[in-house]
Image (tube, rainbow, N blue to C red; front, side, top):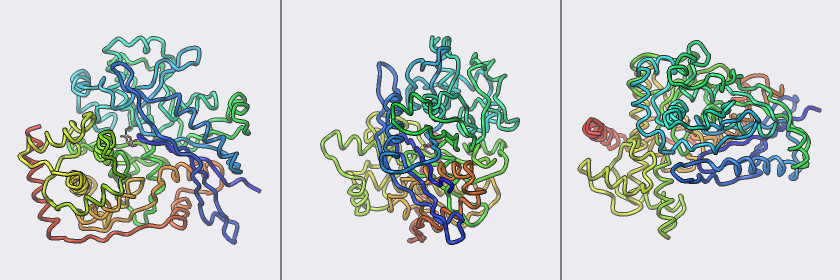
Length: 502
Ligand code: LFR
């Protein structure tokens, strides 16, 4: 009997989780349903060390190990495991196989000013045309350029660069790989030719020998090392390189019927996009700030990175620290009662990237744009959620301009859809339905790629059908069309004035 369960690790910027996915056969013995069970959940808290913000990598590795152990302790026998995480970040391995330094967090300040400097060095248009990526300040290229410019000795001793999921796999299996979807988040990868951008690396003084040739999602990495098996007291299950960029794993689990479809992967970040077979590299794509990221099953994802629920998470963190702690559910309740259409921010204004004091950053934005800062928590949360919803509409309309398609609605997946007010406001702002679900999209997409690699399902389409049969979708229908259209016009005007100033 074939083993039809797999273990997925999905590491997000605020927490990580381990889930078992088990395929329940139908009466014909085919994959009928996917049953998921969470076996481990752990916080992911970055650490400020001196002047830099880092991931607590050793603790993340330990939690992944605990997840493997717990899977077996709970009576599951997964055949394989896969890991997906946020993009762009990496660890450096020295020639003895040890980790050199502690991986930087993408919100570390070392990249401030690096987009401008790098574009000056190598040319902005060229950088976009070759990488297909928007100029997010944290992209790997800017982190490495910052290290080059600060003469980081780590770069001298680095033998291999491993992106976060690959770094975790390395310490579990002893094998070094570079997974394709993560490689495309570095901005050092040439999407058209599908190879590392060696010339660009040379021009920036980044050593090409640190980069391994990418492997496709679904590639078997290898079994856990015997040391890890002894430590965990588990069998040597196989590590599989899934679509290890969390956004790409989430896309695999979007239960879409129609093609083409628009999706929003909703978590700390909001990734709004659509699926293509090849990258779109026109000037307009660059100007509208979209990216082409490599996806699973030979796709490219045309998507826009939107600041997302980070802004709310940071306000909450601050209120918690001030002793006024409130759950997300309570905050959303307050927002429901707060007055509508009063004040908005541009969620993608860079001042919201890592301001330390988020409510002060919002207040400052309001002051500079001639708006009144909301008076209470409910008002602030309302402002954030409405601003996101309006921004989503703006980005959907831009995407329609780029692709020439009209999307009949928006699929929302990821943890952020538990915020039902956000889903409803998004539907309202768009004037179209929102189909919300599944919540655990990244973990599910991670499982589907493993199940394909293990021969339990035979295609991506079969995976999508499995998702549709296994997880409920909540439909939101648009409300208050006139009020929202008026709000959108007002928002656009506000953005036009404020963006030209900032
Ligand atoms: C979402 C995500 C985004 C990426 C951001 C930073 O979790 O992976 O796709 O832009 O994190 O890496």
